[in-house]
Amino acid sequence: MPESPIRKLVPYAEAAKKRGTKVYHLNIGQPDIKTPEVALNAVKNIDFSVLEYSHSAGFDSYREKLSNYYQTHGVDVNKQDIIITTGGSEALLFALGSTLDQGDEVIIPEPFYANYNGFSTASGVKVVPVISTIDEGFALPPIASFEQLITPKTKAILICNPGNPTGYVYSAAEMQQLADLVIKHDLFLIADEVYREFIYDDNVKHQSVMNMPTIADHAIMIDSVSKRFSMCGARIGCIVSKNAEVITTAMKFAQARLSPPSLAQIASEAALDTPDTYFDEVKKEYKTRRDLLVSGLRQIDGVQVAEPKGAFYCIAKLPVKNADHFAQWLLESYNYQGETVMVAPAAGFYSSPNVGLDEIRLAYVLNVADIEKSVLILKEALKVYNS
Ligand SMILES: Cc1ncc(COP(=O)(O)O)c(C=O)c1O
Picture (cartoon, rainbow, N blue to C red):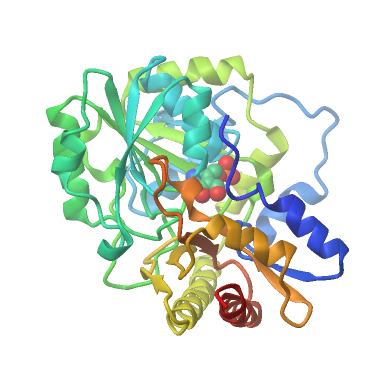
């Protein structure tokens, strides 16, 4: 199993904290946004005597309400298309397990969410990366570069939209290109849409894979409450597909692990009553943070950033040879007035060797003051590191 680039520097951060250094965590997508009260209240004073398993597909009432939520938010999903999972993480495992056999290949534009490597390894599946670049803003690579990689073993293309770690949002035209490709080669298109609500520019529209009728049988959507409702600890997500065979197969995985967590489903079901004003405020806050981080980073000599359109991450190219070493040095050997920052070296978000060595991923999940401070620390640190 590959190690997680997001968590591997944790021991160095812990040691820095023991030495009394304050560490700003830009390395991990744990939002500081409050979980909606309706969700918390639903489980606060709950009255039951047995904490039972639920149905393997999740509570019927939750699936029903979730499908209504999708419909009212313009995503074409019905109850029978949904299996509730233990986080989007388990949905990814079910999706790979249901569509690829051992030794089959999944093509993924990189840089990609690092755990796709781990889930693929665990499923005995080979990741075939296709590189997207910071110079192109991490747009979809040319379709010809996907086509070159297709072999008899290729069964699926996996995308993250909006993208972690790039923040890129695929346009309707790019999604159509992918749709044409999966039809031509009879592949599945697995779309990880856990950041669907987090889009910051009015002229950028999200194209859900569920709203593309021509690929209804090829499309699988991955979703989660973790980021949408700031409920990462609930461990609730879902796998969604209109292909009944995919859902029947995923149900075998779901039955093998018995059920998703019952208490967290109650909270997640209640979270669907969160007023839209919650999202308006959350999006406004993230947009402010994004703008601050991107403009701050761009003012540092030698730093390149592709502006993220969605999610809450960005990749920054640094004037260093080895961002892995720099990230460790920040925690082990550097502090600016008793403070430092923790970032995720981006090489772990690529599966091609020796790519992204000078890049880091930053999560803009801290408040405005902390982001300002973190940018200042990075700027001062780079001066010292490169002197
Ligand atoms: C792109 C993406 N997909 C899936 C997940 C998994 O989320 P969870 O298992 O908490 O639902 C994450 C978590 O950060 C993510 O960033």
